[in-house]
Length: 328
Ligand code: ADP
Image: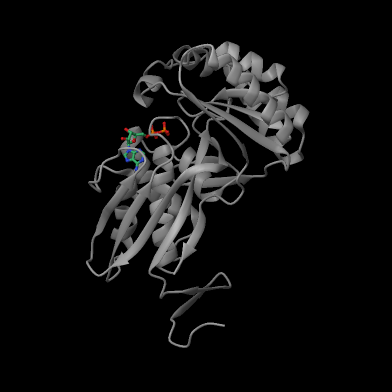
């Protein structure tokens, strides 16, 4: 089954070839916040994401050798993929280095985890080439270091969703604890990405410092019932829980035609909609692909009238997270 001269490590009952030199991965886009789960909840998309190639090199250093799609820095200290890779490299200190190629399909600043896909992808790929010394929580820890470069603070909601897949709840960042929440089988996401720029720093700056107790009570009731609905496949409860009374009133002002978009999505059959990450992308969740497609058509109609360019995606929930395309 395996060549005689290959070296293997057995970890978690998996036989891993340490002779692997190159890996290509799909690193998915993710939706963070998910209405009432600000900074703690995320989910992973299936057909929207970046690709990356990670290769072992003789030189004991990490380099980004190719970037296609969108412009992000080549310098490893300025690229989230480089920062997370270095955080891991410094811990394990192998007697070889890595080069990274990034094929970006997720526009930076789109609100669907462009930086998280890169930060998670580099450490996932390196971990495979190293024989999987780290588990997903440890990989998330390294990826957070990269995310901190884009977000000015350590947040894990996008990177955890990208690495674990499905819905993830970041119970705490220090120490890092990620809970995997089940995804109902028929749940689909429709994502619209208006081509406008919202800086994450700006979207954070407009948030209030204090919130009313009455709003907090509504929010944690919705959040608790959202999590319960995911565990129990209760689409009706999910519909009643996807509301955000704390963040959305402020951030929605940054997204043109947000209220109309949301109204039409719900009229077309969405269970609920909300701002993805810090925007400008807006997500809707629907039961079944037909509803998700109807939502896509309805919001397309709204945005076609605005003159603002946009992309729309319909996706299953990706339960695996980052995926291997090939390795050798
Ligand atoms: P999103 O809003 O899609 O989640 P982010 O706001 O998280 O995107 O990240 C975008 C910022 O991170 C940009 O300023 C971008 O230049 C910077 N950045 C650095 N490296 C990368 C990378 N590899 N991929 C995406 N963005 C990166």
